[in-house]
Length: 527
Image (cartoon, rainbow, N blue to C red; front, side, top):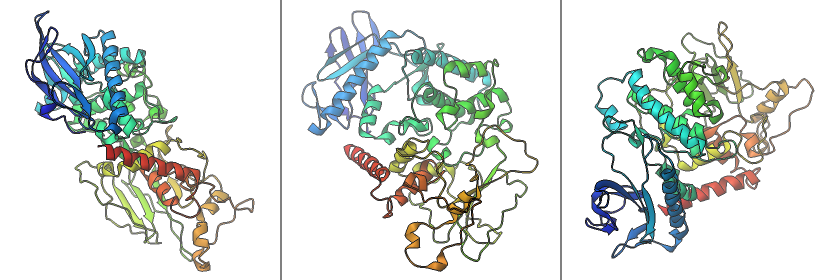
């Protein structure tokens, strides 16, 4: 959301009782912050005014009005959230939380008065550094923020927007969490304008589309705080959760890249940065215990990057061909190879370039040859530029959140083969989809779709491998089942393709997908 116009700001000299506005400190997409003087207490304070730029503006005088009647309900929702945030912050008294002195409604909007804090943001401080800060310095920032979050979470309050530019470092004082942005999130939740309110590198996957399996909680703030620590260590933010949901087979913070930081500290931060909410620390106390050495990161939740497994995904072989097993070459532990039919295309338009180094990935046609195509896929961060519609659909369906999902559904168009190095030690955490457990499932995967079968081309139908029971597995009953173990953006693309086929176009799950797309487009129109 674009910042409010300068003419929407109140002029210097405007009075609210004992408060007199001196000047504008900052203008954002959802509010204006002024420097004001409190004549009663003889001190300078920060005065924040609710002003969502895309929904409302100031006409003549001081009154605020919505730009369109269609925005009235959304504006009112944001106003209530702004007041509730002020009321909430007024209850807390912690040096790392902004204190609200008072708040009120006036001019068809609302205001809150806070201390006028001076200092630099954590982002600006890190940018000025020529080398990474020490672990001790990072802990001096991290520990007070954990204490503040623990206080908030105890009251079921979540910040949901922790980032380096929302942490202030006042001289000689503890770091302070800024900008809870309750109004911003309320408006974003209503209009589905996720890209306008989220910082992709600091937002966990559940913030893109909350569902039963992707609920927000303390783990949401802990992910963002882990991303802040990553930024302090590396000088750049981590790859977005939406990209890591597609490919996450390397550790984010390998010890050899961070020799000055203890491995236990790095492991704790990687734990907080797990893509799946259930694989992160569930509350501040768990993370604090690991940081203090009183506990270790649970083995079952260690990052996928520590696994030596390799995934090969192949399309069904054509009649008369044989797809050999790819040999595991030295140094290929982290390589993911995806074989697609020659006719398949991977949409790449609009994907931004990035300097982030992703794991080595190769896309090959499904032929018997042993030589892979060396053309690399777009890098991990480029995936963050995919459509916001796909991001919403992916997050909603990815971890079992979609309606009518079959937990053990076989994958209809691909065979997933997990190849483990002979000398590898077994790991507690499986980071790749498991292969079908029976020959019957493999036979079902080798069958072409019903749509292809109606074309009458008998030669195009590969002979299915017989199952041990002599019966073939039934065709997928839903588009979600047909997409098998695909997750996140890959799942969203598959769902979109399945819903275009005659078999599933009227299915309830496809109706749900179309409704989500429509809501997203309506939300974009609001802005």
